[in-house]
Image (cartoon, rainbow, N blue to C red; front, top):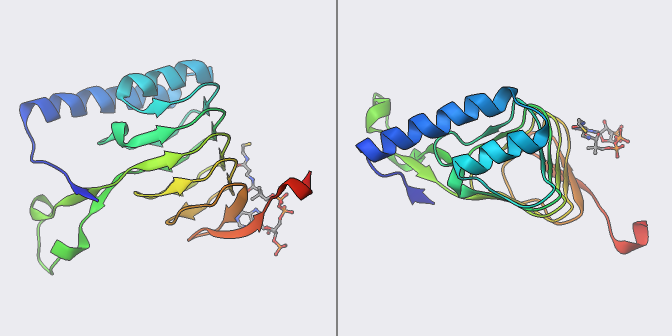
Length: 163
Ligand SMILES: CC(C)(COP(=O)(O)OP(=O)(O)OC[C@H]1O[C@@H](n2cnc3c(N)ncnc32)[C@H](O)[C@@H]1OP(=O)(O)O)[C@@H](O)C(=O)NCCC(=O)NCCS
């Protein structure tokens, strides 16, 4: 985890750029256009990856998201790369004094993120893994496994024998 730097003019302008494009991507289709807009925001995205409408790819740190090829991110998914640092929390603290920490999110090739799921900072979704609809993913999901629930747990793993 890394700490978010203090606000500068550059970071404020970057925020306006990434937030505005994020709002536009919310409502655009086909998916090729949505994906192109997220690339412009700084998200790293491979080939033939499908990003639906109403997907949020961290408004503050889109460059911390790496998405492979052939990935499906379905409607209403939220991927976040920042959260408040609980080490600095104390009763009465104001939000402006409470630092964020950030961490990358990586979606490997051919994984599938089910509708309405939330992926938390620092998580890697393995190649070909499936995240069930409505899941809250707080830990890495191994390749070719199915993870569901809140917090998401692996309920199935596929091997070559499953073909
Ligand atoms: C996770 C998923 C891949 C599992 O598919 P499946 O193997 O056909 O699952 P089944 O319907 O046979 O259900 C198997 C078990 O998992 C549970 N389950 C299925 N999906 C679940 C989910 N999203 N969250 C929690 N539990 C789930 C079922 O209740 C069932 O439990 P049981 O054995 O105790 O009865 C699928 O249910 C899913 O969520 N897919 C994503 C759908 C989606 O996002 N579609 C939108 C765009 S494509």
